[in-house]
Amino acid sequence: MSDFEGLKALVTGGASGIGRATAELLAARGAQVAVLDLDPEGVQKPLLGYQADVGDDESVRRAVAAAVADLGGLDVLVNNAGIGAQGTVEDNDDEDWHRVMNVNVVGMVRTSRAALPHLRKSSHAAVVNTCSIAATAGLPQRALYSASKGAVLSLTLAMAADHIREGIRVNCVNPGTADTPWVGRLLDAAPDPAAERAALEARQPTGRLVSADEVAGAIAYLASPLSGATTGTALAVDGGMQGL
Ligand code: NAD
Image (cartoon, rainbow, N blue to C red):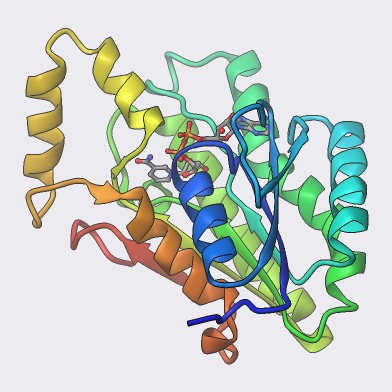
């Protein structure tokens, strides 16, 4: 199947986990794919790697311009880069809030702002944001992270309304706990990683974590012409944990 033949895609945070699985899937389905990441060292051909910090506007503008020039245009933007935060509102100070909101929310605004002039020229323009079940689940010990993903959900709906008449669709995916290097790092930091993993798996009705490939599949669907009439939606990829 070659849903993405001739299409050009940019994936932020595409050097690891969900972003990497997405970049590889889009490329396997025929897209030319650029990866924008803090650390693009491991990005391998046919993917193109660009160093950028989505937390910094100048860096984003430079990397998006370079990627679009090399690709020769842009049809798909996957806003995936994000960072975590644990704790209640009493555990995170203002600096934490500014840092995480700057990357998780304003980062998606920056890449979208840089990409929109190029997406307008595409006859198949799609933006997919990686949100989270944390946006609506009310997870304990995740006040800052949840608020940042709640903002991503609202941003997705607002962008969908603003840009559909320009032919640009905007959707998001809401993964549950996905088996990525990020979650691996969290487990490694736990006193008993195996017990922690078992507890996370037990939380899932499927009895297992979501795979990065399964999230990538949902992102690819929302980015592809197969979802051509869909905009302003959040697709849960959570093994039945919550839905929306
Ligand atoms: P990951 O840590 O495996 O990969 C994240 C990638 O983003 C890394 O390559 C990292 O270098 C890059 N990145 C981080 N900050 C960046 C920045 N400022 N600028 C550019 N690149 C940056 O994480 P993952 O689990 O694949 O998570 C990807 C996305 O999925 C995040 O938005 C996360 O919030 C979301 N998500 C993850 C899970 C999960 O359980 N893993 C669940 C729901 C949502």
